[in-house]
Image (cartoon, rainbow over all chains, first blue to last red):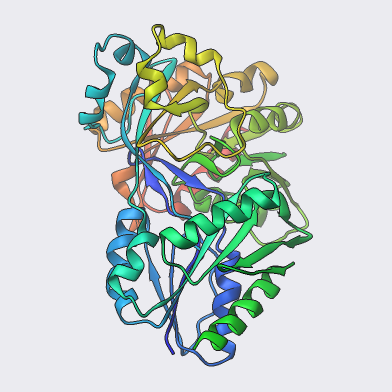
Length: 228
Length: 228
């Protein structure tokens, strides 16, 4: 059984110097990878330059990506040749289109036209007091996984911030159905800290609680083995 | 002689999950700190969580900051009690004010009014196809250093992308005068790669070339000792 894991956070460039990113460190994906390697499953870890990574291991293959575009193109062939995808990477949901001074936006009749522009400069000037950055939605990579490989076991992740358990489960089950995922690890940023990492492994009917990253990884291993 | 060094890149939060950052790794600041520690100068390194850092050393004190605001408040008292500041940190020049869907921007008569708004949600919704992020200029921390401590030796950094040597020197000398810096390390992103790190140590009259991070650090040590 070949395990594909994603970890870390994608990075969307504004220009050659600036980027939009997220606070993901890759720590959870690293622990999940180590847990599967300990059980002697071959693991492909798709991650980013800055993410923390497991020590080299004869069964571990690491693929580095940067932004959503490179994630998608790297993942498609890999999904087709793996049996399980544990997609813990924090994928940017927006990517920069165009950044300009507030003046240009104020002077434009049809703001939507600015979406057809792009920056040609390599480092956008910092003369203006205010800048406006237009962003567009990135493709939802997780929604393509079962198209690429209907037989793959798909485990997604959903991170919300400061919501009720009911809302967390409702949003998670919506994502579960939409992406044809087998499980989704649902967590709230409020419950991730130096003390622990509370998460629920959610499927259509059940929610199983884990309290640390190690417990999440062990529970994933158990569920993957059961579904095999 | 007490040496204050900044390294890494500041991180400006958009919400609790997303942030704007830059590609700085902290590698150069790490090497500069190590170079001064080897000569037994006490070093205070102001850096970020994700930056690479020197090994612990009895003369090294590390202070972690996140964004421009925390940089400024941490740096002010430190500048007053150090003799040299080598400010290699990549400081964000803009920070998020407000992020909203394109619809709200299109429907607003006076776009400037949106600058008075702020996001109350902890994770901004990703329903819209397009988002618009308004950013404002951050305070120029380097311009305050000589106000805080007129006697400090100040070494700034200037990173441009793909410009001529003439333009690089002109922009650098403008920054040198404006910030009352003693030297500025001028570099072009094009010249920073796995092969080396080309930079010029620029003062009012001269430009001294270094070709690697180690050479930059050695040259800084030499110049600081000369000026003492």
